[in-house]
Length: 467
Ligand code: HEC
Ligand code: HEC
Ligand code: HEC
Ligand code: HEC
Ligand code: HEC
Image 1 (cartoon, rainbow, N blue to C red):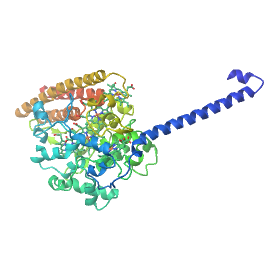
Image 2 (cartoon, helix red, strand yellow; image 1 turned 90 degrees about the horizontal axis):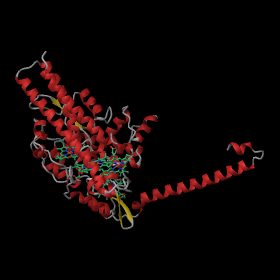
Image 3 (cartoon, protein in one colour; image 1 turned 90 degrees about the vertical axis):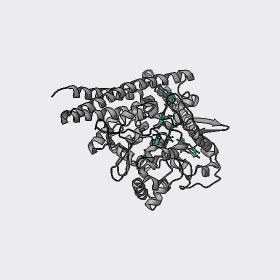
Image 4 (cartoon, rainbow, N blue to C red; image 1 turned 135 degrees about the vertical axis):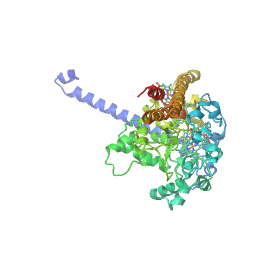
C-alpha cells in the first residue's frame, strides 16, 4: 500500500480500492448464501412434514405426534430397548448389589434400599412406580416433574396457562402425595415437553428448570458456555432471564435435557422442587448454597453426619468440560443427525453415544471408532479407580466416627469430623451419581474425587488427634 500512495497518480489506488470492494461484496454474498444454505438444511426436516393431525399443548401421547413425524417417533419409542455399554446401560441392574460399599455410604437413607442403573426414557414413569424408594417411603408429587409429561396437570391445578398459573399448579402438585399426583399423569417425557405443538420448534417447559436458570442468571458465576446468560447480564434486566426467549438454538439443544438431568432438592415441608444454582453451577457453589440454607438430605445412620445426596448432575458436570466450552451440546452427542432417505433428522433414540460413535463423535473427531472408544475408556477407567479410592476413604471415616461416638469422644471433635464427612460424601456422590463416569468433564471429576478422599482422610486424622 505504501508504494501505491507514493505514486503521483491516484488512479491505481482507486482501481485497487474498487477491486477490493467488488471482491468483498462478492464474498459477502457468498457467505450469506452459504449461511442461508446451512439454515435451510437445518430446517430441512421441518419443511418436509405435512401436518396430518392437530397436536396441542395437551397432546402428551406421542402417538398423536406420530402421523406428523413418524421418523422421530420411531426413534423415540426405541428408548424402550435394553442396551448395554461398558460403564452405562439401559437395563435396570441393581447398583447396590454391584457395589456393596454403597449400602454403607448411604446407610439410613432410601438409596440404601434400592438404587438401580437408569434406563431409556420410555421407562421413566414405570421405573419410578417400581422402586422400593417409592413403595417403602412416602414421596411427594414433586418426583413427577422429571418422570412424566406433567404440564397439563400443572395448568389444570393452577387454573390456566399463564406463567403464574403454571407456577401455582407446579407448587401444588409438588406438595401432593406421590400416589395422588400420579393419578393425574399418564405418559413419560413426550414430544410436547421439548417441542412447540404448532411448529415443533425446540422449547423448554419445566418450571423448576426455568426458575433455576433465573437464579443462575442473577448469580455471578461465569458461564462462558451459556452465552445467552452472559448477554442477558449485560442488558437492563427488566425481565427475568427466559431460556425460550433468550437462548440460542444451540443452547436449547442442551437446555431441553437440563430440564431433568440436574442436581435438585425438595424444600422441607412444601416439597417444592428447587435446582440449587443460586450461586452458580459448580459443586462448591451448590454446596455453599445448601450450607447457607442449612439443608440436609439425611443423617447418616452410623456416623450421625448431616449429609447431602447428589442426583444426576449431568448438566452441571458438562458445564465444566471441554465440550461445553467448545459449544458442543447434549443433543450433538446423544441425538446426532442421521439421514433417512432424503431428509436429515435428529436421532430420537436417546442413549449412550458409545453405541453410535460414527454419528455421535466421528462427525468432529476423525479417528477410527476403536481409537475414540479407547479414549473414552481411559477417562472412564481412571475415574472408576479414583471413585474406588474415595469410597474407601469415606467408608474409613464412617468407621472412625462410629468408634469415636461409641467411645464418647468430645462433641466438638465429632462435629468437626462430621462436617468433613459431609464435604467428602457430597463430592464422592457427585461423581458417582453423574452418569458419564467422568467423561462429561474429566479433569473436573478427577479434581472433585481428589478432594473427596482428602476431606475423608482429614476427618479420620482429626479424630485421631487428642485435645
Ligand atoms: C422430563 C425429564 C427428562 C428430560 C427432558 C430428559 N431426560 Fe434423559 N432421562 C430422564 C429419566 C427420568 C431417565 C431414567 C429413566 C429410567 O431409568 O427409567 C433418563 C435417562 C436418560 C439416559 C439413559 C438412557 C439409557 O439407555 O440408559 C440418557 C442417555 C438420557 N436420559 C439423556 C437425555 C438427553 C440427551 C436429553 C435431552 C435431549 C434428555 N435425556 C432429556 C429424564 C429426562
Ligand atoms: C430433577 C429431575 C428429577 C426429579 C425431581 C426426580 N428424578 Fe428420578 N431421575 C431423574 C433422572 C434424570 C434420572 C436418570 C439418571 C439417573 O438414574 O441417575 C432419574 C432416575 C430415576 C430412577 C431410576 C434409577 C434409580 O435411581 O433407581 C428412579 C427409580 C427415580 N429416578 C425415582 C425418582 C423418585 C422417587 C423421585 C422423587 C423423590 C425422583 N426420581 C425425582 C430425574 C429426576
Ligand atoms: C461430547 C459428547 C457428549 C456430550 C456433549 C454430552 N454427553 Fe452425555 N455422555 C457422553 C458419553 C461418551 C457418555 C458415556 C456413555 C457410556 O459410558 O456408555 C455419556 C453418558 C451420559 C449419560 C448416561 C448414559 C447411559 O446410557 O448410561 C447421560 C444420562 C448423559 N450422558 C446425559 C448428557 C446430558 C444431559 C448432556 C448435556 C448436558 C450430555 N450428556 C452431554 C457423551 C456426551
Ligand atoms: C427431550 C427432548 C425431546 C423430546 C422428548 C423429543 N424431541 Fe424432537 N428434538 C429434540 C431436539 C434436541 C431436536 C433437535 C432440534 C434442533 O436442533 O433444532 C429435535 C428435533 C425434532 C424435529 C426437527 C427435525 C429433526 O429431526 O431434527 C422434529 C420434527 C421432532 N424433534 C419431533 C419430535 C417428536 C414427534 C417427538 C415425540 C415422539 C419428539 N420430537 C420428542 C428434542 C426432543
Ligand atoms: C460438535 C463437535 C464434537 C462432537 C460431536 C464431539 N466432540 Fe469431542 N471434542 C470436540 C472439541 C472442539 C474438543 C476440544 C479439543 C479441540 O478443540 O480440538 C473435543 C475434545 C474431546 C476429547 C479430549 C477431552 C479432553 O479433556 O481434552 C475427547 C476424549 C473427545 N472430545 C471425545 C469425544 C467423543 C467420545 C465424542 C462422541 C461421544 C465426541 N468427542 C463428540 C468436539 C466434538
